[in-house]
Length: 273
Image (cartoon, rainbow, N blue to C red; front, side, top):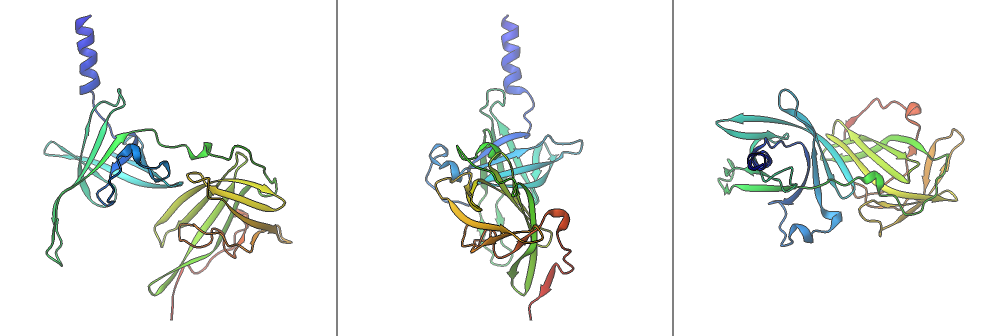
């Protein structure tokens, strides 16, 4: 019995600690805050979900923040007895302590000290600290009661949206998916902008009016009228909504089509004269 207990304790604390699973970012040097992890508002909490690494230490991860989900790729490596992770910004050392079995594991990603070649200024080493925690399930965050419009259900897409950056006007595709569980997702996608983000909203409809809010902030509700044209395409009327990822209207004065009817866009980016 003593050997069994000793073996169990050893397994709990010495078993390989993988990065796969859910983590909450609790210490972010890029954000100055005196709040402890428990004091951070739910709407401001950031979570990461790592898939199991493959044969070559590569995998995917998702970031959950303020109702938005983005997906990226990561790769693990090991050099001189130290473990490194590359999430697209270079290789950085990481450590995992605690026990995933006891659900108190801690992930630390270390950004080393570096000197800016242009300014000569030296920046100290920084640590990003994550604790084992369950990432939110935005699909379960609908309003307590909601109504659906059968004509609205399903996916609608537009490629008429653009963003001006320096001398370029870049287009992006916006796909809205009205689900029968009371959740609306908006997918912003653009290769030019390296953009691939989903935003999750709770919604309800009545008399061709859409009411919605981010799943992480249901107190802030927005309304917009919608209508269908003679071809069955979707338009939003007098859209004065705010808080899209570009801080403009969520829908704008664009026509939304069923994905199979989405017109081709021959020009993805153009130079502004």
